[in-house]
Length: 427
Figure (cartoon, helix red, strand yellow):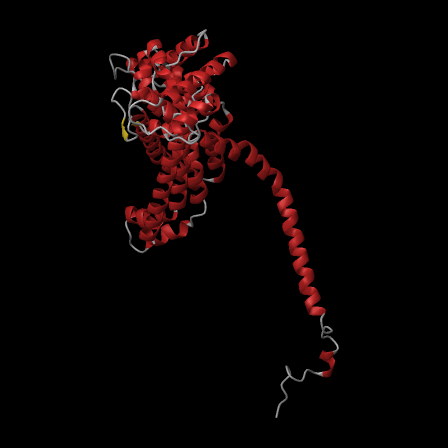
């Protein structure tokens, strides 16, 4: 019977076996080395993670917080906010609420903080600022305290005798509010707290969001149509020619955005180079309107974003084996069928990456539409900047940003679902 070498190792091999327990020591040393490697990796990544947290994540979270937080009235008029919390919303508040408002108004007027409440209430009613400041000044100037504050307030301004005014105050009492988010969706709350559609004269933000998405989608489609053949040419051109063409594609990255927009302003104006050339060739009789409208916005955005479509396509096309396409042709497939069934599916990752990159960048565009677009061509980013810098309405600016973020996330999820389905279909 032949002995099993695993059960009875040769006498010479026994001298090379590790002593008992040494194998476990090696495993522990390997694990310690792996932990040290991970700690060093985390230490190397920590500065970048901290930087992104401070300058990217934290500002976004703070911006989103402002869309649902409403503290101006609560901090300035705490007695009024507490009294309105117990109000049932029917008829007018009790006399104690009027008295609390009077005391808060006197203190805030003396401390010069009433303007914060007036500004917040003016978001809901354009006449609220005048109402608050006038009433606060008159209440602070009273020498004798009246016994009937309700009548005193109504004498100062009849608006204090309307339930709508007090409902507006209660809705602004915070600390959490849906006012800004509803406003960004062209919705309001009526005196009974029901969500209703905004008046037609004030319903603008849904149209602005749809305008933003439609412009971004159109720019993305144009970039895809123009970028695919350019990327194909770059990927299949001889080495020296391909490098030269690639440099030409990358030139816009080395040119400032404002310089490119200024160049398009010169080219597209009524007496610009493009219109003069078309008139000289006899193609048109009158200059075309190419700037300060939707046409100028589309042209300028496509020029800026086209390289972001070309580069992902180029990167994927360089990895596609040309032998597969030639093999399909040699097997009798027509060129169109070979392209659609063999080559195009392999470029799908680049197509989807370029579409996603261009669309998300286009959604947030601000400078280009502001400089070459008209009043009806401004995208939602322009309004976010306007409410942030011009009117200091941080709540509405944050709510518009939240709406844009949610809409982009929904479209991204839809894109992921469609791209996955198409991937299965291509396979």
